[in-house]
Length: 417
Ligand code: FAD
Image (cartoon, rainbow, N blue to C red; front, side, top):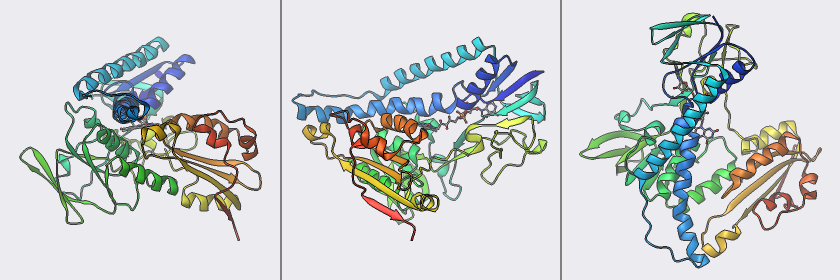
């Protein structure tokens, strides 16, 4: 009997298996597809490589304002895919090596839980474990009300595409939808984004959403809010998409990205007494423990990840309930690089401060290189940094990040009456 059986070799499962084994536990890990899971194989990592690839187009354009004559540029989707797949395979091999070096026994196959201590692999082998960890992740959801929705591709299929489509319709406006739509757009594909809501990125800071929409439109992306898909039909070698507003589009590809649902189908959870919540997720307590004391679950399968930042408009209201007086500092500016390149794009930054304690409660940023800033501001937030400490910090000049320590006057002040 193993001390621990881990089901799913993605971000959550691999780490748990490796750390437990390094502490001396006997560990088995079962993965049905490829080690590394969504993040490494068909999520964060290949996506970021695609984002890097897509940015060169605007860099070439920007270079002209700095005196460069840029020649005939040609983008080769097939070559990028080959190089990207090789990098993903390299990372997968590292994951495998690290697990094996830690002593984890890796099984390839689809796992199903038979009872509290037993897991079957492809109905062929069974393993016994004192503790079981479920880390099976999530997958793209379907809109069952739309006829022809099976003609859509999901983000997994996006990474399998051998050729760049000329015209794409993206259904959804969450972060995955927008990132993939932007990759296509920057690489020259005509892209329309169709979504039910009034604005993109539901759950994020309201000002940031508005700013992002105008930045996306500047790239030529066609945003279609308050719109649904009524029907999708195959028309010789293209797809005809009928929209709820009566319009129709001919495209080469429809990418569905309207949400993700936990991978719990066929895991056998109901039979062992674990009732899923209404999203199909595994309910757990703060220790990631299910109702069965030796069975735990982590990651997307628990549907707990909440990207909702603190200072969305509603969040500001929620924050006011806890902090009766709040100050908001925000700025929109063109980066120095954008001046000579003539690019109209602007960077946005915002700080949310509790007036009573002077503590920083939230930080938002959108624009080139801001992803790197967010990590460090996360540390500052975790350490309960005050606004005065930001004010007292020497600005590193000339950078975009210096705005964070030079915003002196609140843009808005809130107080509970
Ligand atoms: P996963 O990584 O999905 O791993 C689950 C594993 O379980 C899979 O390998 C699967 O094959 C396996 N499995 C499922 N069922 C079984 C079974 N019955 N038996 C055996 N194995 C099974 N997050 C970020 O933080 N930043 C990003 O930039 C980012 N970009 C993303 C882009 C895309 C396109 C997508 C789809 C996701 C992105 N994410 C990003 C989200 C991130 O990938 C997930 O939150 C993370 O991978 C979840 O880890 P996990 O361990 O819960 O599940």
